[in-house]
Amino acid sequence: MKTFDQLVADASKGIQEWMPWDLQSALEQAPDLLMIDVREADEFQRMHIKGSLSIPRGILEAASEYGFDETEPRLADARAQQVIVICRSGRRSCLAADTLKQLGFAQAISLKTGLRGWNDADAELIDEQQNLLDGDVAEVYLAPKVVAP
Image (cartoon, rainbow, N blue to C red):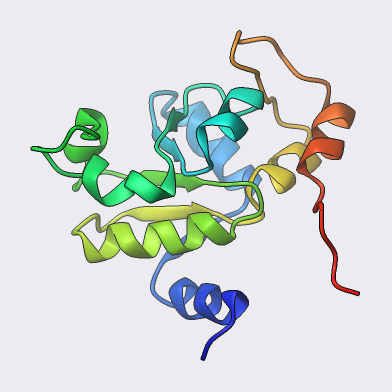
């Protein structure tokens, strides 16, 4: 049996990962870069990177193909372009990027360190009303809630 961290480590071997500054640079060159946030809807509403789409990991496969209620056309049409996958810590996004690669998305890229690293790099996060969030407030929310004994 594998642990969550082992699954993530295995998935990371077959995908590309960007650090937050890599994504910031890419967004300067291509502000319409496709970014999908695979956290749950309530997490996305609380805070996210401006321009990212909410596609929870639980519906990722259906969202990436036509013919499903969950289909997200921007994602379904993106098999030949870069798709940046985002989560809180970089673990769910790593697994999701690996899944996208298996589905034919050759340029699925996980944001290493996730929104925690994005916030640590003083990059902007917004809420569901498009309001800019204070980085210190975001840090408290993004911190792990349960730690090993």
